[in-house]
Amino acid sequence: MECTLDWQGPEGMLFISRTGSGHVLAMDGAPDGGGQNLAARPMETLLTGAGGCAAYDVVLILKRGRHAITGCQVKLTGERADTEPKVFTHIHFEFRVTGKGLPLAAVERAVHLSHTKYCSAVAMLEKTAKITHSITLIDA
Image 1 (spheres, rainbow, N blue to C red):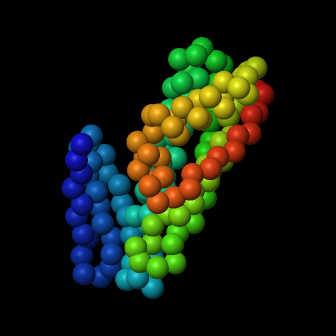
Image 2 (cartoon, rainbow, N blue to C red):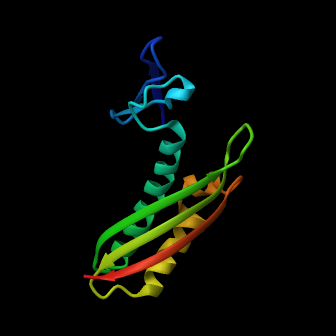
């Protein structure tokens, strides 16, 4: 896995990342840090990656279990240390899973497996952050 980041010039802190899979991602900083607020912050992309990793696992586990999942939304809330390096100290995953007749136990199992076995991002982030989650099940 690889990516290449290019700084977009002396006027700000905009970086464009080109991933090994051929995609482009922009990141920028806040104005008080020299950025122009043109894109997500790097730490926001880290949080987004963790959410994507966990959501991917949950959907895949439920689909493989032949459950009728029709939607999955994850809202992440992260708290960071007050001093440098400002690592995440607590991250809460709020899963909203939609489906027809989805058993809550199956969704809980999928989230548990993601957080304890499959999600590489959670495995890395839990070295500094307390990871918690909640689940809301929506019958469609």
